[in-house]
Structures are given as structure tokens and as C-alpha cells.
Length: 205
Image 1 (tube, rainbow, N blue to C red):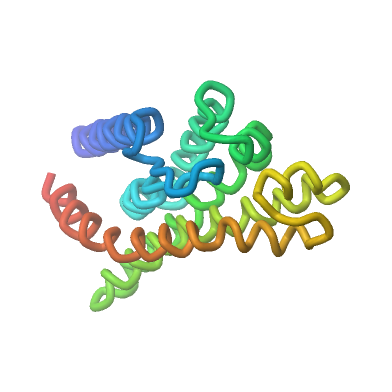
Image 2 (cartoon, helix red, strand yellow):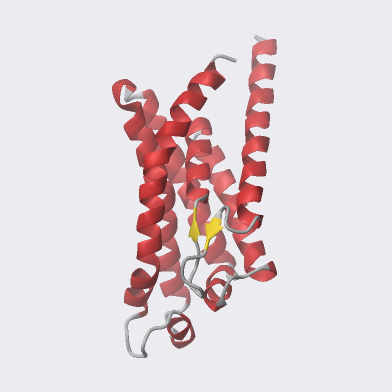
């Protein structure tokens, strides 16, 4: 029994290390994890897919921790290699950079756990995990950005290319929702294709 537990801990550590390495590659190699479509606006990110797969394998607590690592890389990139003023204004704020990513990993892990209950619908649970990893992150970035800049929205609104007088919340949804929808669809479709066979493979070990 001890050997079995030790092997499981070793496997968990190995899986975590591999996924953190993948996340770091996505975060810091140009156009791998962040793909800039419109200069000046936040890039479309494929990282929610990685978060969803890991969280589906390891559960909500590990998913939240992994999401926090993602948030830390976002914070670091905003200072070291921002792709525009919007990135600086949003993701140099630790609240906006960290909390949505942490929540995304936690939500994805909860959805992934449904696969154990939905035996005949496991792909649906993994698809939900991918969808939530992206949707929760996007929605929380929008809401927290509106909260942080509620009393002084002009600078962020102008950086997003909006006219003065418009609601910042509407501006944020308009600017970021398209990215969020594309990310959610991508993550929702691809997560089951990776997670299901990978989980079977890991269970054999």
C-alpha cells in the first residue's frame, strides 16, 4: 500500500511538473500561448485549454493552484513584456492578474470531477471544464477591471479605443467578449480530446 501511495505521489508530481513546464512555454514563447490578433488589445490565449486538462486530471484544489501559476506568469509578462497599454493597465494589477486565473482553475477542476459521475457523458464533463476555464477567466477579468477602474474609467476606456461617456462595463464586454468566446469554444472542443485518453493512460500506471 505504501509503495502504491508513493508511486501515486510521484506520478502526481511528475504530471504537475510537466504541465507547469508547458504553461511556462505557452506564457513566454511568442504566439504559442498568447496570440495577438488586434494590436493594443489583450491577446487570445490558448492557456485555458492547458488549465482545463490539468484541472480535470487533478481536481479543483490542484486546478486552483495551477491557475494561480498562470496568474503569476500573466503578472510577470505585464511588467516584463506587455503587448500594449491595455495589458499594462489590466494585468499589472495583481487582483486582475491572479484571481480570475485561480478561479478558472478551480471551476475547471469542479467540472472535470463530474466525469466520475457521468460515466456515459465524460466528454461532456471535460468540454464543460474547458468552457469554464475560459469563460470564468474572461468574465472575472471584465468584472474586476470594471470594479478597479470604476472611479476613474477614462484611461482604460481610451486605451480600449472607446469614446468618452460610454459605460466601462459595456466597453470591456465589447472589447474582450469576442476573445473570450473564441477561447471558450476552442477549449471546450479540444479539452475532451486530450483529457479522456490521457486520464485512461495515467490510470494504467
